[in-house]
Image (cartoon, rainbow over all chains, first blue to last red; front, side):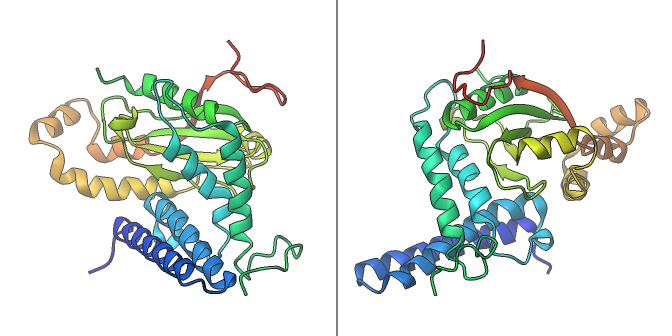
Length: 122
Length: 155
């Protein structure tokens, strides 16, 4: 049976959680930083893919790792949004999340920010 | 009491303005389809400094515990991409129609015979309505534009 987009989205979300758990296990085991960052990048990318797959469809996902810098801040902003004037997230936090999302994206060796960022998780 | 979909869209836009310092405009993407609670609120958000990668909608489920009563779809674009949408250089693409296909398959089970008869009496098939429903167009601006150095929402 052919998988639906919702099945793909759920699978990406589960894999993201799994990657994050591995990252936490690596932190506890005090492994080298690059391994921890590698799993952080993979978790962030799969969270974005889960949300994108639901609307765009799995076959429309680009063959790229460049999802995080643009989409993670949108997801974070929505996740922390409370309607009815109960916003508890200060504006500086979303700006900081945007900066961190960009740093996470360039951890993928294929994402070098137009040949500017050669540093990555490898 | 549950808000109307338009009121909920305005509240969501206001909440996003409150947390996103670079958000300059929020526009409704139509059709809103007030009568169908499953149809998401669709917002086009113009954010200064966002990475330009065209139209990439993100879908979110409803979360009444946080005051979000309806599912939503957010399309974030840069000011330049917003101009391109306005002058027709950038379009919403074919994903709304594709999504319509998925929903039509679900709705063929959900729609009652009475509803089908009502639709037929109005001269429109369910397919016709669904097709129109998923042709997205830019709707009204939900909150006034914010200036480059103005972090407060204009009254």
